[in-house]
Image 1 (cartoon, rainbow, N blue to C red):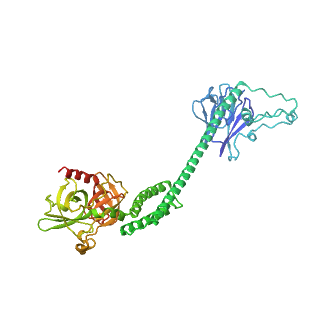
Image 2 (image 1 turned 90 degrees about the vertical axis):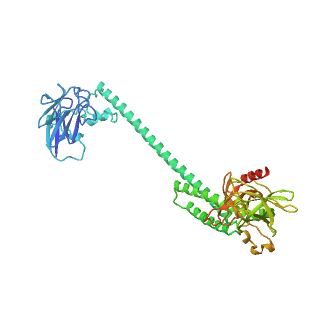
Image 3 (image 1 turned 180 degrees about the vertical axis):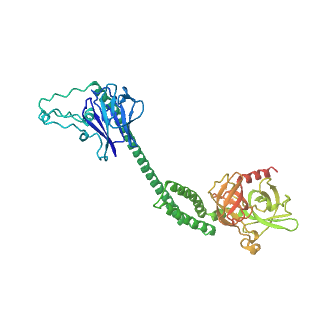
Length: 498
């Protein structure tokens, strides 16, 4: 591979030879130059004066915007100039010169411009007898001294003169190098510090997130364990509630297994937390319904509930549930559903009667009032000595509250069935939960128990919170709809004004 020699013909380094093995070599007085001139004596040369570079099989010289220009064989160049053997390069009109000599050979592994590459002319026998002079200052020594990393060379030879003090150019270069490198060092230190702070911040966030996730996981596991304990401790004889509690146990155990899984992410844990919150609300409602003493509520109000019997023109008969809400002397008001006592045209039944719970006597009844907007109606009955009535009408109810539905879901087919004429009619009670509550409508989860139209819905205090008027088809008795207590009170005020 072709290399190049640049021989100093004059100047501070006259007689020295630079071997160029790089593809691009700079020439100047700056310490980083590949072909270095003396910073104090070769003043015609700029800091970064010119460059010699390889272009294909040729070497080319280029002026790098120097102050005094670059000459080749006495001609100032304005662009790139291809060099041929023995071309003389001058740096500045009266500056130092270099001779270009191409060479053939392999590129060595060592970098260029080492001290070993400086070829010096052979000395004669007479010159060898001359007392030793001060060691030669190579470019490497000059650069190191400018950067204050190498102490002055020892002057061991007897009679050697002391080195000259640094000139003003050297001082300026040294100050500039120190200024630029100082800023770079501070920038590097600042970048390193910022990187360390960022790494520490990220690590801190990860640690905090893992700790928070661990705490949340432990809290969720505690909630699932508490819910499982409550489910296991709850018993009921209602088949629908038994099925609901068994499903609740299975779902909660599945959630617990998922929460305790070894592999977990924040998003996955958040999803499981939302599922657990929804299931806890639903399962706790079932637990409250199972623990709700519907029988006790029924005992306090059972004598006020009865079967409402209606017969329409043409002989059509229907039966539902009603309950007494007021007594004036021997006259009592029984609240029931409008569709049980009127036909589709709003005409009242031709014959109305009420058979109270535990009785087989059918008391004649008359229509008092019917609601215009709700499926509610009031009929009156005359009973010597009066009749019991419910404890009261509740002002409000909330979703999740346990309730009891009390009535005759199968009309005359309710227990004791055909023997009612001998034994009397018997009402049944079943627990439920308020699933949804608005000003006019209640949605009740009755856990599979059928509800008869007109059946009262009682809260834990034995007060009426609604009146069943229908159910959702295909829910198998699971969803019942009831008119709210507000509509009941409104109809009673309407009847009192008559």
